[in-house]
Image 1 (cartoon, rainbow, N blue to C red):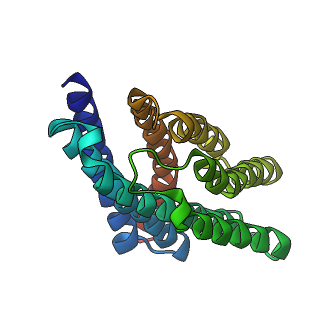
Image 2: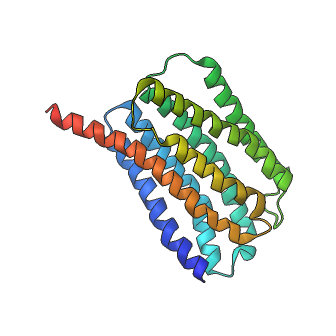
Amino acid sequence: MGQAIVETVFEIPYLSFVIIAGLIMIVKGKSRLVKLAGIMSLVLGLGDSFHLIPRVYALWTGGIAEHVAILGVGKLITSITMTLFYMIMYYVWRGYYEVEGRKPVTYSMWALAILRIALSVLPQNEWLSPNPSLLFGVLRNIPFTAMGILMIILFYQETRRTGKQAFRYMPLAITLSYGFHLPVVLLAGIYPVVGTLMIPKTMAYVWAVLMVWKVYKEEQKQALSET
């Protein structure tokens, strides 16, 4: 019961925040960059909803073991949407730092994303099983982790090169998100309580959304000053 209360109190406000923030940036954003950041936040929130809402429901109605199938489908959907989240983040990075060219990086990100999604949809993942494949859990997260590492490097390099500060902590936020995500992938099937690491993981994503929200607020402030 305690775990159900804690996760409910945290996950519902989290999902509400990232979805509403995304919608606001899409509707009110002036630039392509801010609208893209809004789409990034919205994809994060809607994608996580497919996993977190069934998880909260399961915790209140008999436990995780009683709702394996719906949780498995939610994890599959979230696996795909999180891949899209990082692809959109890549284009937010390009837009904010006004990056031109860099085709090898773009090709690498797309290749990793396609590989991640292809691995995720294979039946060998056994998403609907109470004991899904640990091997495929590891395999599908190899390209996903590579995407994260690449984004950490890119944000760090461009922050140092340009001196622009809005995303200076994005490498740390991404690092923390992966640091909490990987134990869930490896151990949650054996020790369900490890799933509570989703809470600090999602806090890292909240931090990332707050950074793009700051870019939106700066845009709004500039628009007001010009009127």
